[in-house]
Image (cartoon, rainbow, N blue to C red; front, side, top):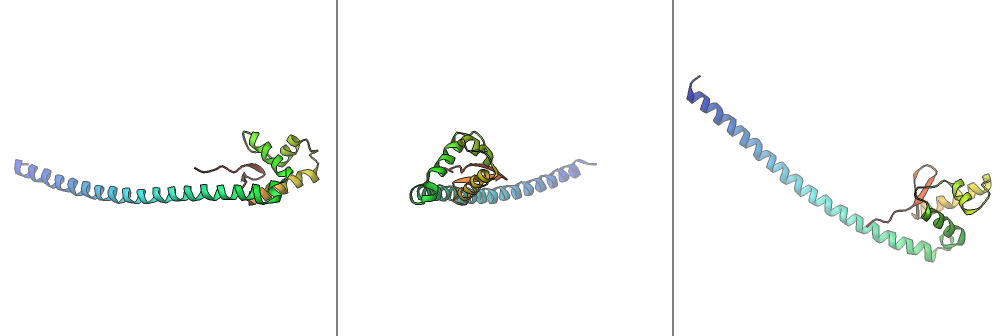
Length: 135
């Protein structure tokens, strides 16, 4: 091989590498713009979620006599002191209620109602936790 052939090969490789780098810069630019758009959407959703949680928390603790009643507030108190979620039977025990099937099912019904009102969550079947406020 002679020197001009080697220099031509290097020039061809340099052109290919430059084109590839330009394509990657264009992809980065497109991805950066898309990421900024999605970050904005996530921020909007977080604000919306926080606003809705504030409104529904106020609504269900002030205006909804069911959720504001003593038994529901006792359940909320028990769950607020629990580091992890609890089952209906555990809540009965914490409240000093006999964990008979009737009482456990009654408590479970209350818990399910609170999940429907987004006051509690049931991330795992039968394990209830306080709904986390998003900020």
